[in-house]
Image 1 (cartoon, rainbow, N blue to C red):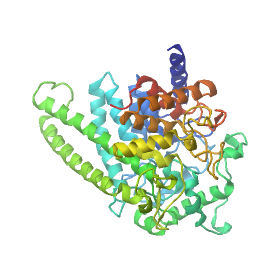
Image 2: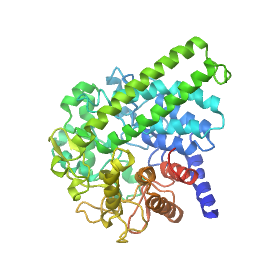
Image 3: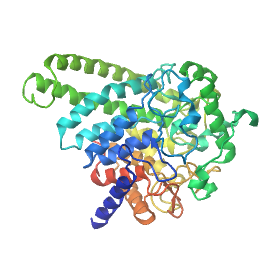
Image 4: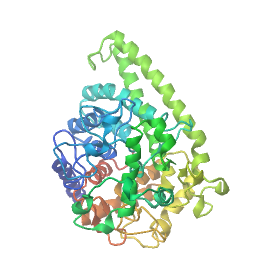
Length: 481
């Protein structure tokens, strides 16, 4: 217990250190701005006793939301000049949807935010304050999810298309190797630029994407700019177009939590009308009535989105030749390349993400758990330093223990699996992951990611989402309610 108290204090200190007054940076020097899904993880961590900071974190991010509903993956701090590509590189003024008061990127990231907002309210001691926050944020969350399920899903599949690897959150995953191999360009088509991430990681080039890969990342931003960030044109022109398994799974989970938020607000409306708790919100009866009607409409829309996801999840993400989940190594779930019109047969930790969605039947979940425990993903074979899952199986030809999403252990992915295991009743396996995460952070610091062999911390130091998710795992050992 004392060890957990020390670990909790260490993680709380990291979030305090990285707080700017308006938002929390992921890590000093390396990531000096606000990142979208980082902000959501951080707000979840701060929901335990730091309600005001958690609310400010989400408000600052959504203040930069685009008119079409997109939440950008970076909101820039204009005072910081140590990151490339910076705000001026994105040239978002090309788009009529972009905010004019602050610099952002021109792409998005996985929508963890509704989950965080639900827990900001659940964990608060001032329910009036957090109810007001939920009333304010729900239309913005709806607009974001609607954008993802319209502009980024013209097929009406209930699944999200990403147009750049950075949108996935798994920036240099080997999943993208084959799709990126078809992205070709002349060097003259690239602007002159200098990578600053190499400086930020003290020259540890083997921990970050290669120059060739990075050039392609920048080239695809150039295409977005030439399309003036017009979603319809980009959807037609981008050479990289993937139905993303991780992103779509997170959106499905987030929609469930958006429904939970709407349940809360409908109950607030009911209480106000019945004058049982009429002092909860300073809102007129007439507005209460219209708000309640709007919440019902939102719920109908969300349930429609979720039904589309449920109809198409297996069709897009489970290859038909491997229709029985877990029958062999290729029968795990895979991303779908819309340009190649084929599944990307690259197995990473993402192949197991359906376990976190509750979309699996019990026997399918059991098969997933067996794969999760298999030595391919670190387990009884004791290949790994701790029983936490690496981003790529250690026996894969594209495994690299030090390089970003190509092998190291990431805490956010293990957090998702921990939650999924708890939902399906695998408490022993969930505890093993939780304890493995605690051990990594206690022994090797609050780092961005970890060497699966030695446990050595890699990437950013004093990394905020690692701190935030450990805080959640300490406070909330039984997972999501």
